[in-house]
Length: 309
Image (cartoon, rainbow, N blue to C red):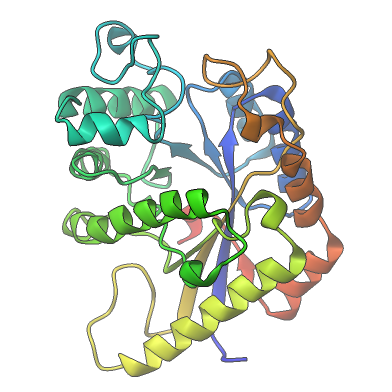
């Protein structure tokens, strides 16, 4: 196994989606199974999640949700290009359509992001995550730079193309996200925004999560990082990893929790199938398994949050 110091950020996504998701994510944090959370500000239980984060000192970042539910900004809840005819966001695929048709107003995208930041009173220790769609990436980067937020997520997962267990339709969506992410790198670099050197989470989500899958994904990513680091030893230092000390930062995105029970949960439209699935509990049980904790210790990995980078 190639040697490298590993800083591992395990992010519990969608904190605030519903009380049962909050409960599961908090339990994971207290068990040392996750080290960071991503708050869904327009989630049904966002206020409860924020209180839990303060109570237990849970490092928190923000999920810039522009696809599910409705905006945080009150002024954008009516007659906004961000919304469909039912008054909700266009959805993960719908937002791509309105972008392609030139119907999405970037001023409204920026306005909603700013309200999210102000709502949470953010400092530069926080990080933002979002799907880096087309022109949105430029607005996103400008807002982060303006408010001094230094870190984000770039969802480019090594080895994703060879994951033949992922449903073809879902893989098409993932590859679209990957393409957008590659196109975002230069934009983020220009604005001084950083991100972990490795992202993992699409190939290990839900039913595809297992101790062996997580171990393989991390080990393979570290090996690839070391090989790339060796081959570019004389090149300039990357903005998102510390080449000099041979340190790789990895973000593992996870979605643990207890399944949502309708009608409670969601972002205004009720809980979706993803949140109601048994897979949320499966992730919780996998992440808190002592065998996985032992693996991190055996590899001498440092579990940390974005504020520790």
